Amino acid sequence: MRPPRKPRAEAPPQTPPQFLSGCAARQSALGAGARTAVWVAELQTAAAKKLAGRRAVAEGVRGWRRASRMEAPRSAPRERERARTTSGSDQAHSWILVTSQVVSVAWRAARVSAMTALSLLSAALSYFRSLYLYLGHRLKWWIGYLQRKFKRNLSVEAEVDLFSYCAREWKGETPRARLMRKAYEELFWRHHIKCVRPVKRDNYDALRSVLFQIFSQGLSFPSWMKEKDIVKLPEKLLFSQGCNWIQQYSFGPEKYTGSNVFGKLRKCVELLKLQWTEFSGMRDYHKRGSMCNSLFSDAILECKLYEALKFLMLYQVTEVYEQMKTNKIIPSLFRLLFSRESSSDPLSFMMNHLNSVGDTCGLDQIDMFILGYSLQVKIKVFRLFKFNSRDFAVCYPEEPLREWPEISLLTENGHQYHIPVF
Image (cartoon, rainbow, N blue to C red; front, side, top):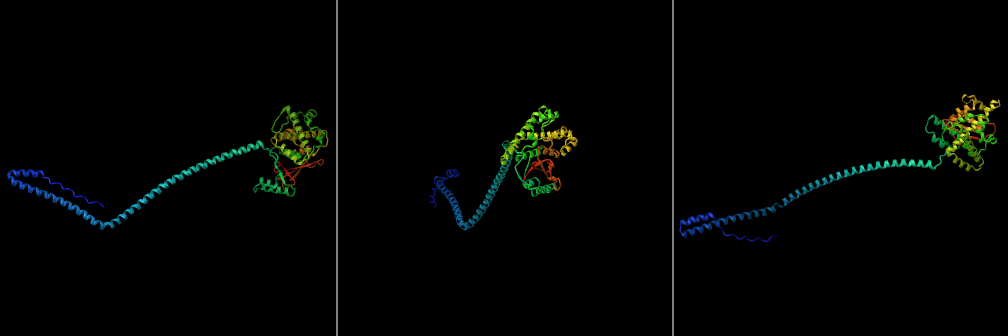
């Protein structure tokens, strides 16, 4: 509550300069006493008018204030209601505006954040994919390198179940695939073959399959090898029989080697004799298998052994050819050999057939006959591509001269051979 205001002290009335100048004029005309009375009366009249004007102004102000105080209580509830409604609508509108602005700003921020996150995620996925491919490539390279470095590359693999091997090699429903599956079933049910040892596929695979079984079974030397020193056979062909054409002998992929042929042949035959003697004198089957795995993982030693076998075949052809020239009885397979234009004598046989073995081709059927005759083993071959025919199982030679040991091979096309396991 405000304290009551103090009444203002009213200033004494001032005489206007115009009035004073009029009074002075009249004083000069009238007498001193009359002039004095008139002057006093005029002063009083002017003061009364001014005071009345001020009071009227004050009363007007007081009336306006009083009227405003009297009207305020009557219009207060409506004004407050109107003010409350207006303020409520303004507040609601302001809240709506603020909320929409906040939502709009938040949506823009979320959209920018989502786009940034997606871009970063895409870049990260692309980076990790590239890193995965690079590491996979490098890991594959290192695995292959370490396998080549430390793992023995066996040219004769371990035993594989016959049906598993067939299912792996012959999928689909082509006529040839169905024929091969039936042939493998025939091997299992009729010939009691349980497993197969896959052999490295090259132009030495027939020689490799035969020699591996000779060593793994511990077969002894052929009778004619026991009677002769096979290490001296290269010199014998040259000096005793005058076969100077043997200098054109080629060692598989190697071509003509000139006068060095005899030295290389001698080393190859000597290695064959040494290894064959060691394996034939070993009675432990598991030890022979371990040594076979070790021997047939060395490509250089393998090639020397196969070239020694080729030379023994050439020596037998030369010996039989000399017997034929003296009209001695020779096996029928050699008559068939010499009846061909490409192998009418030992030189043509060597140049047209034997030198290509290990290089551009393997052994054909007549070569398999000569190999079996030279090593005095009966080579039984299951030719799966001849299933349901009389040539499904053939022997080289067909009629061995004595009770020679038998080894078995199987082939799917007549060129590549594998070892069956009973």
